[in-house]
Length: 215
Ligand SMILES: [Zn+2]
Ligand SMILES: [Zn+2]
Image (tube, rainbow, N blue to C red):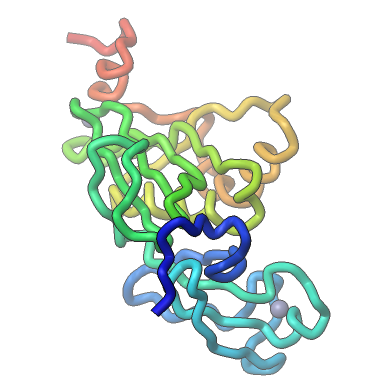
């Protein structure tokens, strides 16, 4: 038994951070690696990633080509703990999603992704049950934790708070930095498709203190 106290994981004691891929309950595992190699043809290897305490898959083609992202873990975005605040770390070292609901209907809720007691990223969102509407307001992943699918997992965790709801995304600055534009073009694009700007219900507008919220 290894005593983990005092270790931070920054030296790679618990394994390297690898890509995560959201897998919804009941959904079959993907047939292709994130780069598009058909696993049945190119070959895949099952493993265990200690850093996340999750089973992992490695694409043999990506691994043989020494491409980054050859190994990934499938993570259920609906598995979330409740936390009083997004600053409150989890008890476990593993990869953990922690949701902090808003205090008012239509208010700003948060979902934090923790890896090794490090808050890797946060999504801010509004969800209204009565109106069946959700808005992804903001997603931030710390620079050292980027390119690992964490932002995509945070968005999936947000959508899991309102399955079947009408979802939209807060306005994205067209002059935003490259990271933001890349994230919008890949992860957020399915939510951007048919309408311009976010669709916030009356409750959300009232929670934001907007004057056009009505009576
Ligand atoms: Zn591959
Ligand atoms: Zn509402």
